[in-house]
Length: 174
Image (cartoon, rainbow, N blue to C red; front, side):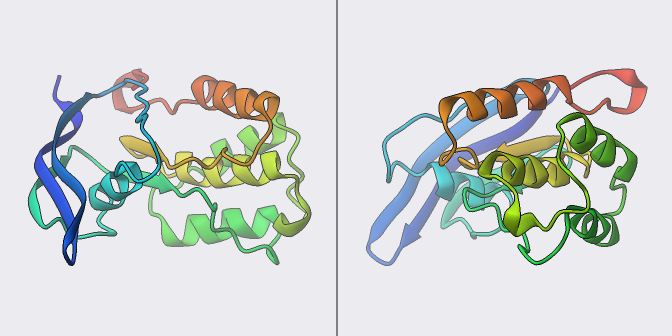
C-alpha cells in the first residue's frame, strides 16, 4: 500500500533563515501520526507546504490523493449558522458528504441553527473538523485546532475523530 504522504529533502526558507530544512518522511495510509516538537520547529510550515499554502524552497512533497487541513485558528465565519457553514462546504467541495457531516454534528450535540460565533470552543473545533472530514479526503491534517481547549474537550474531539473516520471506496477505513 502506498503512503498517504511523502516528502524528500523538503525545505522552506524565509529570506536568510530556514523554517524547515531537509525534511524527509513517509506517512502510511490509514495511520494517525502526530508531529511533536517545540514552537518554531517547522510543524506548521511542513503542513502548509503539504497543502500548497507555501511553495517549498527545495525538495519534494507528494500527497497520494487529496488533503484537508484544519488550522489552529479554525477559520470559520462566526456570523454563519452551522447549517450555513455546511452549505458553504458543500458548494465549494465536490464530493462533500453533507449527510455524514450533519449526522456527526447531531451526534455531538452541535445545533445546526446556532451561529458559529456563539458556540463553545469545543463545538467550533468540531464544526471545523467536520467540514474537513466531510470532504472525504485521503489525508486529514490538524494544526493544533484543539490547542485552546481544556484536556477533557480535547479528548472528546480526538475520540470523535477516531470514531468517525470516513469509509473509503471498497469499504475500508483508512
